[in-house]
Length: 137
Image 1: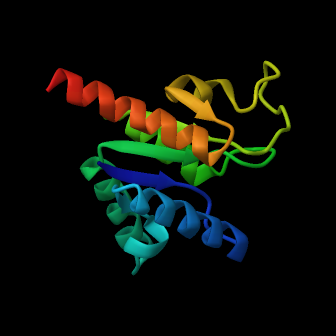
Image 2: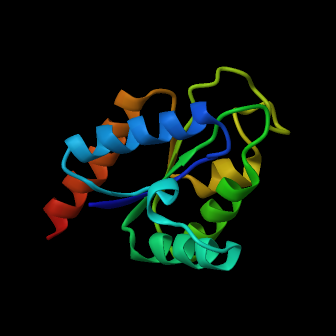
């Protein structure tokens, strides 16, 4: 399965975590589109590359950490949702920050099929969608 990772990538720690998550998914047999690795060039080239990555992916994993979701990640979730892509959130941050006391903003939470609290739960959820697709096929 081709998976797009939507995540903040502005600090060394964020980029390192994204790479780690991408490698974990690749070890499970998935093809991963990681913008920090795949996209470069001008702002317009990076923007178009990210859109193309979402369009060509079968599923989006959105890293939803922090007191507010990264703006770029929120856009990527919205775009993927508009395209009908399944979106799985990942939030290891235990703080509740959403306007209704949830883990994330209501719009982001509603766009995600589910929000995992750790990587193992995320991988199990992704495995569940693969099993369902195999049963249908």
